[in-house]
Length: 467
Image 1 (tube, rainbow, N blue to C red):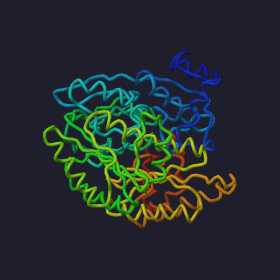
Image 2 (cartoon, helix red, strand yellow):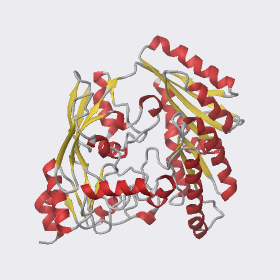
Image 3 (cartoon, helix red, strand yellow):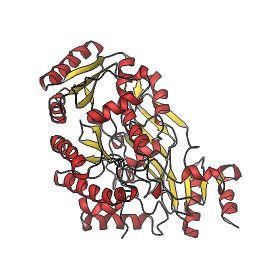
């Protein structure tokens, strides 16, 4: 039997693509640079766990690479297939199996879009706090595979804090049922946490048990402008003393203005000409009466740091306006620079945020290229994004960017940070791992990978340098 016949035997003819333009969609994720793109030989769409088991057993027998994929929204190339391999897309495993209001947990398949899960939880007064900022397009399984974070991680933490159980198919086609509806579990090695954040290289999630929490009753935002980056990031330290703080997002002035101008007129914020850096500050409370006092405290911290409030509000429209601007920033960089940009994901200890932002400001001059600086100032995770200058040739950019990234990663490492906080290593950053991980550390990771995937068929080339 040929490839199509073998896969159709497992999945059926309506759940298998082996030719035509439909394959094109699966050749790349949101990494941006088309140089990473690879056309798979096939895409399959499982609807139940047994199909995934059969796929992985077939992959080992035939030596065929398999790449798991959720929403394809990753920014590091983790869902890009090996040329001639098979993409296992979980978009049809999209059922919310159970909302357990007694245990405050939800059981879901991996292909559920994150915002849809949030909408299902809302009538119960609950929410999944570990979601990332791409919640309208990303899937729960991908969030777990990346240990995704987001704008509210400063208060609520990342995805890993909420995943209590998982059904996982190993690279060799075994089923592991890890954890469950238990808040404590030290029975054996913590294989669940090993799988979380492993970027689809150690197993494929087919079912997830996630802890949910009571939804905040009240939420408010401040959007504030500052005369320079330093005053903005130094304000963050004072803001973090406010216990109800759920987000502190930073955007440099040029990027804020350009993104704001790119929005529909009805969604734009009025920005002071004197501001060269902006903070989006969000607080939430379970007690609506307390919210105004908390927002007042945040505004006092902004003014004391030399800032001015651009927008303040607790009604949904105010929140939506501020968050629309912040969420539009990465899409603005893509539109402006096309494939000639590199959205980074560095993270430093919170106390080193001023040093990181000051260094990012110097990058523009040092490399004579635009650099958008934005991200999660509250937890030290920044998306420093160099973009090709209009005066640069494509050849100059291709020569400059590896040097710029090496210097950025080394500086971040020296500040006590690392090269990815939430987007992952993917295919994009494996060549830089030796900057932040010792050979001993990388060797241990390779041995874990080989123990679980002896034939190297599950997402090879992703997350680690395989030696």
